[in-house]
Image 1 (cartoon, rainbow, N blue to C red):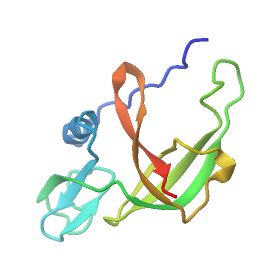
Image 2: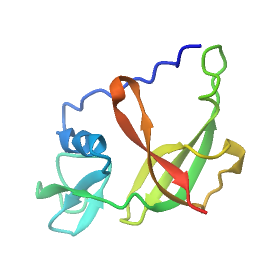
Image 3: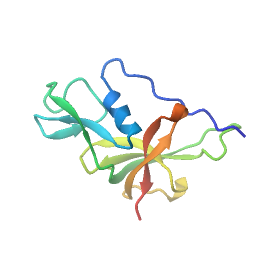
Image 4: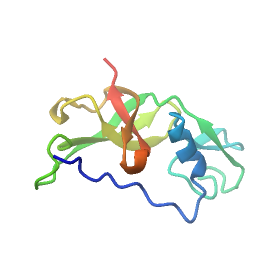
Length: 137
């Protein structure tokens, strides 16, 4: 059976997200960093959520964090066996921002709020990688 389509996110016309995708291609999670406040932000924006200024740069983060919230995605229908259900989590990274991703190494019913996670990569169409997470025991 053919693997289901995994669409690639569309380009953002308001914010240059090329550094995020270049980092993903290199296996690195990079997020916007406000030089004035010394804090990260995610999702990308044209200005700092901390200061309102444009003094931003992209920096690599550890990808380590804690599950803040979780849900299970179930989609009925043929062709999705082996991919669903999915554990979708919001992770609070050690750097103080939250990011959404899939848990790759556990059954959804075994994923719990408060579990520690580490960065992994989920493959989308055209070889594009998107941040995902694995439980750290």
